[in-house]
Image (tube, rainbow, N blue to C red; front, side):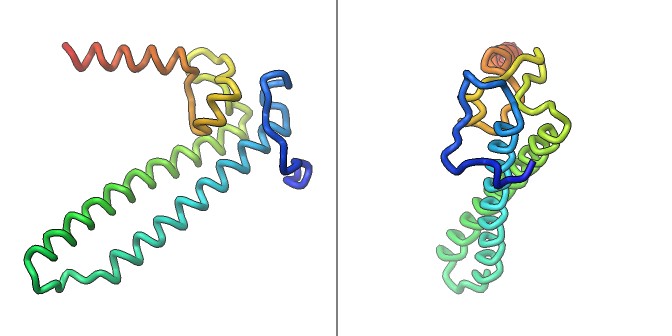
Length: 139
């Protein structure tokens, strides 16, 4: 499937066959673009960390620099996890599993995937998981 077959105004709809080739290509392109954006941002983060030196004479400046650096590292960690979820979603597109709930095998649904292209669970399965997590936390 070549990417030029996808018209720029194409938007997946519930009425078409779920995960037809055009829909798969739509999500593949979205995931790839999202990953490229994250990689670009994390590249900028790395440059920021290298250019701001820890040689700040003022203790307050150094403390604020260190907390900024901690925040950047947390952000980088989140980006790394997100990128691995995007990679997993791209692999699921290749294997034909993309868009189907890992729990039930049912279609996750177009609207949910547009909102969260890395979703692996249907809304119902997601809510079930969250309820179970909450129960285990409260015990």
